[in-house]
Length: 332
Ligand code: NAD
Ligand code: UFG
Image 1 (cartoon, rainbow, N blue to C red):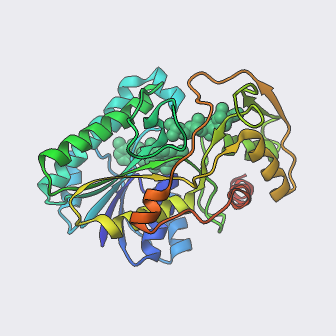
Image 2: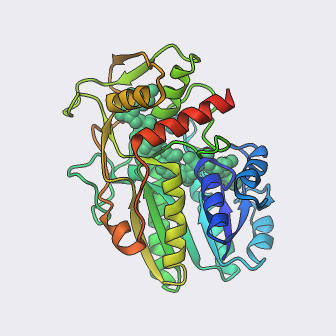
């Protein structure tokens, strides 16, 4: 399949482009490079042996996108979005414009070009504060605690309404839990600017001596050791989940929703311990107050993806840590 990949130079997008090439597909990458480097394309080529077609275009540029969409595209995977929770609180209009308007613009262009196969990057954040675990796809979506989360809930609604109005669309919404890790080559990974918000990039920077110690947000949650629980999933598993969804569902009209996680939760302190054991690098930490907006626990029921997509995550937490660390050593 010739697959338009918006945000394909980003963290999850670049890994997915590699998985697509490895599965014999032809990715066409669109990225405005607002949160990625052009050099990622050369790295993809080094890993996958093929340089993907690349357009430095914003998904809101309908004219440029129309030209690309009419170049024989079979399906689209839509990653392009802004994703920093803190920033979204400070710049809500930028987030709604980029994420929500960007998605609406993209859908209009795809529709006009007759492309009605879409895989969309959603997030476990749409479940809000869980009342029951594990999280299942049919559970109601909740209330977001920040504009970024609201953009995901809104985009899911837009996609749901579109599919109801135009039932020939195949729309798959993949709700990622906590993607971490990096490509085992050490060539692709996540390199957030400034001080990372997310746990794993923070841990690798502490291990590298760039940051003095991890601040563990909250030691008094009702969990095994008092720290937050998340379903960490290797980014390569997430990437492969997209290929599975595309191969199973494009051309199958309907609205399809899947969790992408491992089905297992780990506490923040378990991540620290596993990282230290797997890499031999100490991660000094201190327990501080809870971070506003955080939920105590979140993990996925992954049986639907296993059953219907034939996909399940195969890489364990130690592998996620080792791969994240290899990448950290490479970008230093
Ligand atoms: P990322 O920032 O690395 O990738 C997003 C890419 O989209 C970047 O390369 C950026 O330059 C590009 N982009 C942003 N706005 C664009 C626009 N208007 N036009 C063209 N390109 C644009 O982020 P990621 O972690 O790879 O996330 C990919 C998707 O997965 C996002 O939709 C994100 O919300 C979603 N998601 C990520 C996580 C996570 O923990 N990483 C969790 C749940 C969902
Ligand atoms: N944490 C720390 N210290 C840090 C960073 C994180 O203790 O420096 C803790 C958090 O409190 C939480 C856990 O580590 O308990 C995971 O935090 P992350 O920021 O890595 O991930 P979140 O689950 O908060 O957020 C992720 C994505 C969001 C998305 C959300 C729900 O980053 O984009 O999952 O899907 F909205």
